[in-house]
Image 1: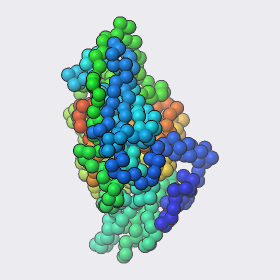
Image 2 (image 1 turned 120 degrees about the horizontal axis):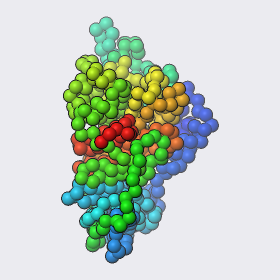
Image 3 (image 1 turned 90 degrees about the horizontal axis):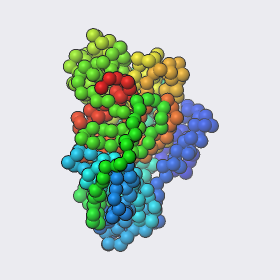
Image 4 (image 1 turned 180 degrees about the vertical axis):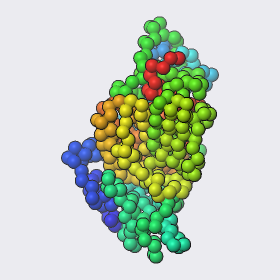
Length: 517
């Protein structure tokens, strides 16, 4: 079990072993993959470990300019802006590492698209956009976190991974006790070992004083360790100052885009296999338009039932995946939710339409999910559920695994995805016609009280890992990361209904690529 030891300089697999993964065995390929991924997401550091707040990034003093703003832009062109970061003393920054999010948008057209940020690591950034519609196109750039704040987030992730903790209740013969649980616990007291026997994914609870470990009945979110940031670090995470703050532009802050004289290339059906591109799409009139395939619009319950006829749909993940289940059962009235007696916001849930032989099942992923009370019998890992599915052409599986992993070390996430990926590959080997869909992360609200656990930067890092690990597999991505950045609604982990509708349209366009409009 993990004691208070220095793990930072250990190999990523050794860090896992220090944290409770003792019975794991790693193939040479898995070890080298993890090393590559940890290197891939390394983040630039400030030149000094302690930077005074006045020397940190100040979005109000910073600015961006449109390059070649005098040229005539056409649909299909690239737009590039250059951003210079300044500190609170008004001096230009000379190093990078700030985390930015950017989009272009036309409010009158309800149009928007995410940008790609290039860090020059000298205080300047290039941000690239695809111009996908005509008219007045505005640019918006947010400083999500200054580079100095990200060093604090890295410190917490590496040195205080237990800052979010879970609990379980144990009951036996009328007696009840509640104890703290986590992926790894300091062995200051006897432990109950609930490590998964198939995957060897660890989970521990402190043993009740008087009850056996077998008396566990549930799992629920406990609390957060508070006051994790030092006095100076707190200044890097101030609402209205340097968390998700807009960076001003040097005039103009928009371009006029002319229609292209070239015909728009026809897009084909949405099929499995092609790699994800960025930008993966854009909004126009509040409809998500993929850059790679033709998205169908499922505007009526009848269209969805036609698509899902004779299909069983598994939705595995967190509350952002539960939103898909809720949308489908609310929009299609005769897709009836069965009353299983489980909490509405927790699940598992099941819905059926007997007339069309449709089954939709939502199931939360296992620990470290941070829900209100869930029965211990429902703490099943996604990889184990995948191993139980026969698969076939009428089987659809959608998975999301990001939001509840952000407080934990990246190596924990890498190992979870390696196990899930192994089960996906085995499923596709025995049933190649099975459709597997990966839903990416959402951007979210980032008030100061949650950034130490659920920052967008944490999500961005592990979302990047997940995309890389699933590359080359014959399955599908729904890029909800870009879909939530590009939209005009305020960032929220639980996206608004119009965004969910677009996510479902993309999802079902892969389920039924040739459905008639």
